[in-house]
Image (cartoon, rainbow, N blue to C red; front, side, top):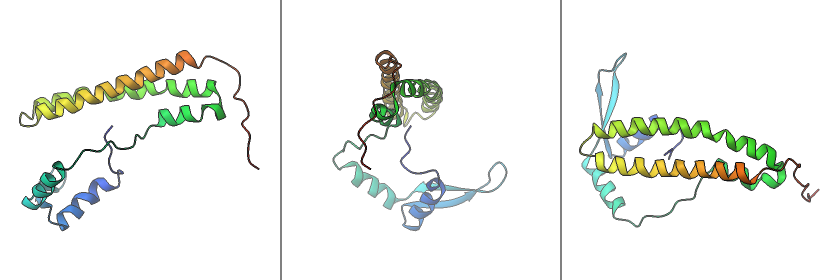
Length: 153
């Protein structure tokens, strides 16, 4: 739920931050091969402290569900209602992953309080999505096709 970077950056970003001096890298044995372990440097900690002291901004919301609703008049209520219903599987899967995250938080006593606050917020965000699906299923009950909008040729 908290994807700040594309999957391709998961491995390149730590290397970049290490080159800049924010992380230190060391090799350790892994299950099948050697792995790189990164730790925060003093420079990295100073940068985090500086960032933590700035004002918090409300970032734009990226939501496929809201996008589907915004195009509903163009594609029709039936297809929108049907596609929104598929969100329930993702919600259930994410609830299970949050259960795992909560268990992991209990194994990190120095971070547990903060991680549990995040997990609680994410659970409420999932609940809000579930309420949205419920509302769509209640409100989009017509079977008539969408009106053809005026189109610019």
